[in-house]
Image (tube, rainbow, N blue to C red):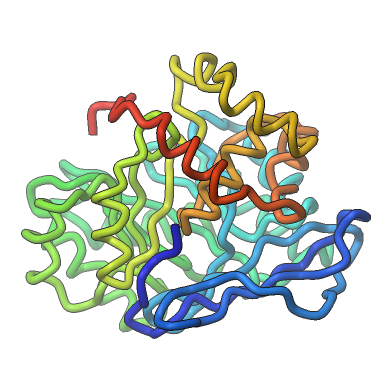
Length: 321
């Protein structure tokens, strides 16, 4: 269940736990070429925040191993959700041009920094440009993302899907990296064939690939392939996706495992992603769910439980890309 050696040799992580039941944090360290979790001395946090561990990306920068997605969050609801997430220790936020909420994400980040909740450099903001006119005129699209967010720089910018001019668009993003306006690059909805076509044509290796992944669509060969390239895997639809979530959240195997740990079924799914070294970005506008979602670092699924969840795979993809 542990990913292979990354190109930078290891995923480093420091867990900051605040749950009263936890007395130790955890680190991910290298052992025999693999990333393994070991106990480390107790860490402290601020204002009872629970912070996710940080992953070192293949360019040496760091990113939280858990975050919040903002798909379907609009206007004030988006602002409040992102601000609430930052107050609850989230340091990874995912948005996109197509979500229509980059303004609100940027406002929430700026306000949280101004209020002393977090430092800008500790937050990773991901956004995306979309195929079509944006890939054909990428410089304009990239600058618009920077202007909309208005947070000095974009931490990671992605291509939202493969498409015509995707290499052209990515190479334009590379120029913004060289100018310091974007720190890292990534891609979304790229699988093995797409990666084999795309990667030889670009100069900067993506730090992450964002794909659909959940217990009913585990896509293990693709996850393993991406990891073998030294690239982080991030899961959109980590809880099954629109129109399909209700069945997954009633699954009897997951229900039983959740009861055994005294956790919610959602927390079990999110912990499963984390133990597969997949970064989950569940979205929510419910403050209690936002707080609950990140509280997954005070328990561990056993090998047997991970095997049981692996057996739930149906290769059931819930979106077209």
